[in-house]
Image 1 (cartoon, one colour):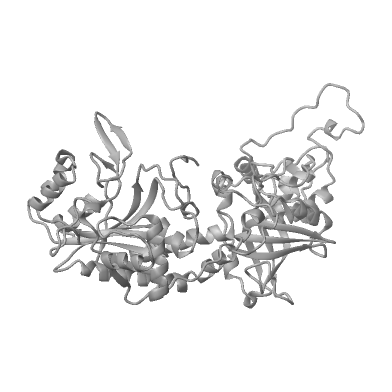
Image 2: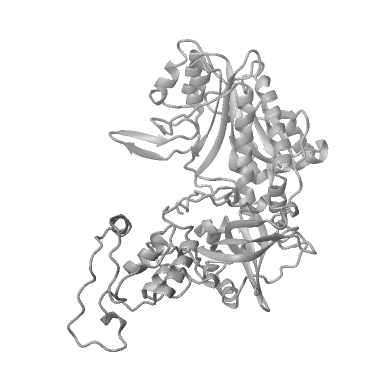
Length: 601
């Protein structure tokens, strides 16, 4: 809000600082104040106190106050009254004028009296704030919509948020203020504390503008169904625009928030927003309640992953993303020039987490970081860059030790998502209805051969020596759901030929491997295995897979000085969130997705 500016006339300065009228022989000549007042004048203005400039030699008009020596003509009694009012408004101190004049009110008059007085009380209550450039730090208490409750009725609160909707009714305006997924109704109604100009100003603020509202919290007679804070309402007394949004948006949030059509529903002709348009203006698309909730749930998965493993004695590591060779056989890499060498972006932290766990003495490690795959896949579940949740652990006897930990990990994540993120799940469900995830305790575990047998019983052609394609994986997911009442399950003992070079062969069948995948709603979210820790066997598998040894020289050397038996896996974060929420496209769970055609924003 505007602050009182320093008076430009010495008479006003004398009155403001001393609180009394001076005595002097002529009203046309300013007083000669004491030395300490001159010093204060110098400190406050940066200028020496002195006589006023000589009047212009041009012919002065009788009505021109500036013709009088010493500045405009001033009534001392009126000046004293105005000075006292200014002193009360500033708490007894003179404040410097703000450096910006960005307000929603007309410029003030330039007379000395207008310089001293504050903006009128009516105008103080609304307008456009000066640009926030960290000019001042105050002790204001800012409220959060999510913390408002009827217990606080009668309290004066200060809120900052976005104008979600605006509706003029009679002498008032109903605003829906939004913070993240939380909303509250605010009423600007003409009355004793709100004038007509403020109501008009409130009605003219564009949607998605950021505003500060000050008002009294009340408990409405009926719940406000359009708001998340249904049992409270803000009676606005002050309103200031912090940052105005353009009047025309690329698309309306109302259109971007429409619920998905369900099977059997009529295709009502309503405006909708396409995926490309959403992603081109992602910063607007993420303002919808569903998207706010999706990425808070994604944060929850990462948080719970880190929390669980930390409690189990794992440490978080950070592996390089610039590599001298491929880390995954069978996957394309993003090649690049690394000074005078050829390099590529990491397809996973696989090799380095193995070295840290089995060879480096850490035994239990995990990482959350980016993964790059140069695959020209235009499916609903593939990205060229995604977030990997990886862990690696030493084992004593069997890779089942890893599977048991995976089972506990996912049970922990699923349980806590439903308890800690209930509001977010509700927000997603309103726009993208989905069935809550079903899972077993402990997690269901099938062998690859058992999965193939289930498919064959259902009439599908499947081989125990070939990997399953996407169609068969989804079909198996439906079969497992019907037979075992679970959306999440594990499958192990995959054919060795379809797994990476570092995968340990099965002890009872060299054509199979000690590997495993995990699925949610029939789609893969985890790939893992027991790793080879013997340097000779590792070399044989590298040669068998046709991977150049030179690109893996450092990795191979790490196993020459003794390595612990170990296993682990990698989880695709975006896939977990997509499938847990029953969404149809992984781009909905990637904040700024990268696919073969998209590199911006």
